Length: 508
Image (cartoon, rainbow, N blue to C red; front, top):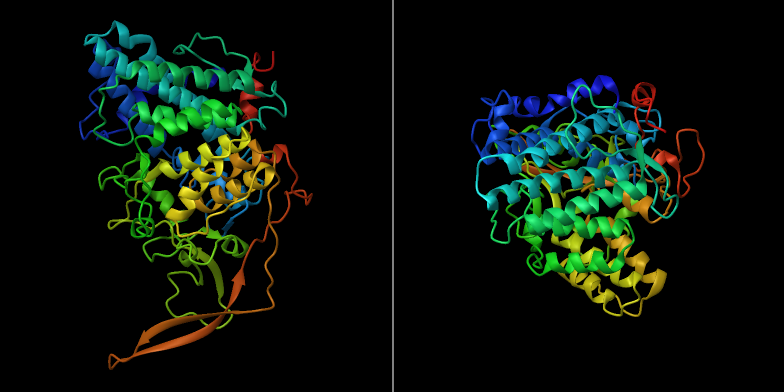
């Protein structure tokens, strides 16, 4: 990490607490102003609360709404999201934001390492603080889980699949808190960073007490850590352990949501299927801003950015209720569209709650079913298809049979695209499976009908049908006009140029 960042990082724990006037526990934390915070286990816990709030709710621009910016980037760079020309993520969609070292790169790098440093402060100091052993172990375990989560982000974002180049450079590993005199570290390989992420998560799992019960769903408990381990082992191709941890999670969160819940807006962490989510309130709602990109059907939204590729709808079976949520429509603010106004394929998956707030989903049971199915398929197990069909049946889709090998994997990967649309997995799945982005233009020679209602001055309601100009993908190649191919650096976050210039040890 460059020297100029070290001064900033060294005091980031104070910043992340000070900026949070009301913590996620609704307990003020802005009174914490010095190292005395680390003298009690409660103080260390406050550091984690403030660090999480900073990770999820801090902005560099409105297009970088905390950690959610990385999730939105992942989907904007994938197959199935069509980003419009309004503000936010259009450069990511066009593969220029990361390759040209745009603001998301620096924001990702700084926010990730600031979070790691704050976690390191707690890891270093909590065992010497006042409090019970049980609470110290819980807080240290949660700090390790947070650090492991950040290293998992780095490994899956800054390098290609682990078997493409196990020695690919990702970024430095820091295991203790930095100070202004800390010597910047050299960059570790993707293998080393994944190993550190898994080590942190495994240790966190051993420390967080079995008896710990979260009061809020953003906090790390054993089940969340097991879910992150299932992801990490999937990404590192350890299929046995990926399945082991996915099944451990499903033993507690095996229930899948109803059709009514699926259509309710993906905005409420109390959903039975949500394992992990970032909650929002009217007082603390910074992360909700990203629903202006995700929500493409509500007038309360603003940018309507993350529309669906028209060909994406064709992946769904008839009877799959998710398909009924995808339809042609104009801008939701356009209440009287005219013929040849543009229409996008709107997927009504994400919707603001009342008051323009929305919780952010981070992990669901459906992901664990898909991890289990993929891991079992990779192992050649006959029951792989069963895990896939549990999810398909819950969504009203046709169950599959007689598939094995690559055909079964392809089916699982398509199901991931359908089920996890907009939740931040697209780019990661393309990279880890060594695939190429798949996009094609949609024909413009056939208008699509759209019917809406109007009320005259006498209160009579009439239906009006107009023909709209359909919009599909407009970016079907990399920014240099070369075709999408597997294992391209265009898919990766990049180390900021200023880091390369100012950290002389980076590539040693």
